[in-house]
Image (cartoon, rainbow, N blue to C red; front, side):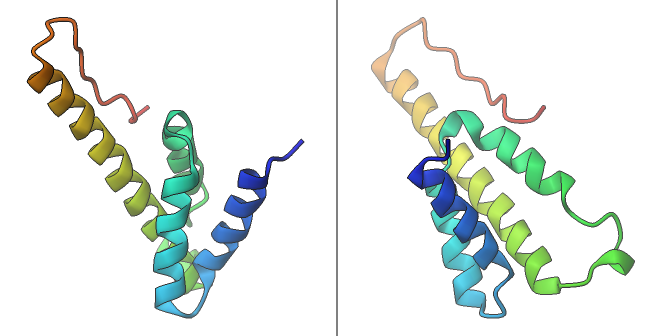
Length: 105
């Protein structure tokens, strides 16, 4: 069963191929905020695996640009949350804080 968020993300991903740059940007930012952090790395891998293997096979450059914007926004979101976690650990002065960026599989 699909949740409302899953349906919304599907529609936002469809907007990533819009000919309007602002729509591609906004949909990419929205997707990055809606994906749970634990699913970000697999979501990025799915997007990257769906990219064309060469520039010859690119049919719609707006779609390619939208997908790359999504990857960019997701990585930016993921890195910002890792930095916040790191800073929280540093400033809390707890010795049991361990920070690792494990989104690359």
